[in-house]
Amino acid sequence: ELPAVVKMALTSKDSFGSTPLDYICKNPLMEGMHATRWMIRNILVERLPFLGLDQWKQELLESEERVRSAADTRTMSDEVEYLVDELGRLELLEALSLLEMVLWRTKLLEENKNKMMMVEGDAKKARADRESCRVQCGISIVVANVLPFLGKQQYR
Image (cartoon, rainbow, N blue to C red):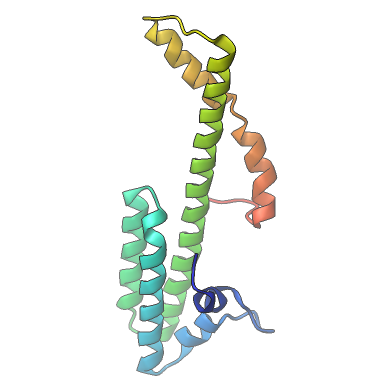
């Protein structure tokens, strides 16, 4: 969970649709650029460990480097917006992956309980059961009904 002041800087919008972070990014003084870099670093330190794929972590670190090396406030603002949006998208994908694994495991346990005994030595049959449980775990129904409540109608 992000500290309240950071969450406010990322999500609270004024009547023009700008967040406090937008204004910090647009500050032409060097202090504004330093504050932006500091805030992005702290956001990533808090949230990167919760992403499972190293590739995602690396992409976000590269995006942070683009923020750090931005020569002007316009470029920095664009890079910060991309980084924050991408972090949110990847966190959503991570949550959906974990949800799918939980549903899959629940379906496997349910199927095993119904059968009470697996056919010993028939690894191919056991594998087919795992695959069919994944297909039938219900993730497509959950995603279709959960994403709209999260405000994410679609994702890349």
